[in-house]
Length: 289
Length: 298
Image 1 (cartoon, rainbow over the protein chains, first blue to last red):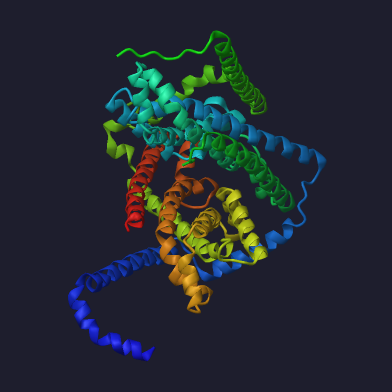
Image 2 (tube, rainbow over the protein chains, first blue to last red):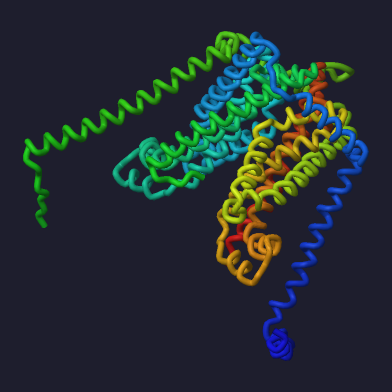
């Protein structure tokens, strides 16, 4: 070991002279890394100070949290009447997620073609629709739920509309990106046989993007089943209403029961959607995203 | 040049055509069954979710009139005018709101950072190629699953009771949810690495932490950073509604404005939130593209 290092050392200045680029930028690179880390860590500390973190508050909070967790055991809905109410609310959540995702996909499907560069009617329309989709995505589902409650009143219908609206923004963007990534050759082939613009989209692009879109819709159904559990907190139906109520009234055993219900529901939906997805993707041999 | 294509005899052609039509019919029947199933499920969910189209049609005016109302001043000397005619009046609380907005971003940042640190520390134990012990590996995976299944607002509601009102429960709720979401993605990245350098480090006698530092980390770091940036954008949006339940940030003012019908404030706050989220979205997207292109450079 020592011998070899002594054998290399005399060469070092020569190496340095011959390959300066391997020695010099490393300092620059290191400085950038250290600078970035310092700024990020500084922000981190600033954040802790600004948001009022303190050691004793965290400690007492964790102690309190431990007590709450102990109070949650064993999970217990309270009564049979409550149990059936919870089950009904869970079904409502699944229905909200399913309907919201599907309606959003149906609306976003044509919008995606308008917002994609290769299928749009007009460059200006394309740009405008992209910006509108960005704006829709910028607003959280909970805020959309509050807005829709103004229109159709409290209840799960507002939740469906809220999930639909916020997903139109996301789907529109994802669909248009999938359409832009589609291979041009089938389109040219369709055009060469005399296909109109509509034929080109139907036979050239649709078969390519359909599995991608189906995979994304399934993925969002899963994710909406999770976020569908919270829109009830503002009154838009589903299990969130009961969850927030049980937390506010400190019924900890019912809270843990609801949490377990949600975990089971999400696991079941995951399992179904994984099978559906492999069925769809497997049939057409397309990479998903 | 005369060319001719040999044509199948009619009886053989008929068989081929018959098979073709059968295949098409079977495919069509399958698609129709699928569509019918989806429509039936939609009707069922519509019934469960109390969808009432007549109410939607009757009140759809409310949706647009709501946007009309939040774009109009409703009190003071400028009542009845459009909000953009007097930006100073529209954004009367700009100073307060900017501070709240900065707090919101900080909540998102701290939550993302804490969650990413937690995910980073645990993800190597959840990766099948680095962690031979299946009990520990599955335990960590289940923990991640639990953390990302429970929505952050629910964590926030519980933490508010333990830690008191304010941004602390918001940060912790986002951190836990982020840890679950990022932990899964990080572990998947680690499972996809090239194992040759790991074998090389192990052959030189490196321990677990040294292997991770010199063989795994250089391969995964840019992907980790890219996912964390994506999550940061999501978390800022999430932090903007944390105030709905009292967990700090700009959501507190927003829900107050919505509930008390301060229409002009609603539009001002929504505009500020959309602007912030868009700026962060664009910024992180740039950084991510830079990171990914660095990854692909030989």
